[in-house]
Length: 416
Ligand code: AMP
Ligand code: GLY
Image (cartoon, rainbow, N blue to C red):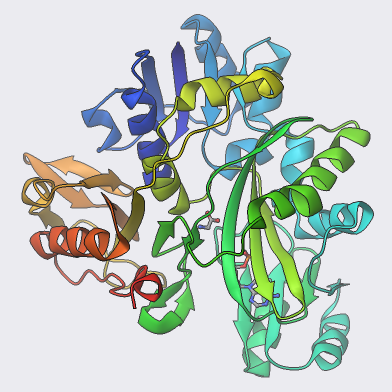
């Protein structure tokens, strides 16, 4: 197949690497891609948030499938433009991407579909925010309604900080004040062709910047898969109680969801609750989930895009485990330093089981420089989490980027 992958992060690098592993062999193009992706496939500069630009390119180059990685093109309707031209696309239309693009809409769908989620109040003024903060009490959870590049959510016991966050976002639209939920978080990716639902293997993300879940929220500092501590039947239960009702509700409203529904879950003492939906693969969870996928990713994505998931073979996941550790620039997430040289990547790659997905790098003088906050995802696959941790951290020992930081406790809880 000729496949166009949209996006430029470590997630897209992992998607491209997984597609390349497929014995069937595919012709892959990435737009715009990144310096790591450019080492393995052709990359094309393009404004991927413009549906007409992407659709014209896909038509001219006769691609068989477009895979949309990030949320921005989904929310701006790139999938709609492709579908209008009869091009197979993995990723929901704009109307269905609202499950991620509006937290308020996601709550409305969950309420209608009977999906368990945290209680929330929609506030349109700072007075309403204050009343809701008083109602729920500390710790406070405030969420901007729309896309905010991972910065829209605050969880804090500091009422002033919760108030300031809400006061900022409420200028642009409604905010949600939500009850605080306590428990382990699980990311479950579910493929949907609009009616059939196929879950992938669950993963856990590390959202906070520093060890022991301290520091600010980030886009994700690491992940591992599978989750050996999950109760039996967990994935089937989530498909039945979360994914299927949501997918049915979207179909009944005439806005079927075609692509990947990312169920962000929290296991509380009172049961599982959805904390968020995303309309795309998660980053960095994709790096570990796809690392363990032993069957064809292209076949699954194509079946999803073409409404034939019911006849597609179920995905096969390895018994191996995978973890990823994100290397971040100095100052991430607040104000990352960029332009610094990265050394030691080739040596890191000599560690057995280790691969590296690039997130924010640029080629420079025969090497790479960092161009953003999350720079690289170091991925390790092994027969145990202890061995995967040894491999990933020994690879990180070889990598030098001035001032950079990473978490040292990824998957530690499943080793000790
Ligand atoms: P979200 O963008 O909604 O996933 O929120 C980002 C992160 O904030 C989540 O991964 C959680 O770690 C945390 N979070 C979100 N909602 C809640 C909540 N109601 N209670 C506790 N933590 C939350
Ligand atoms: N890892 C969280 C996300 O992709 O939104």
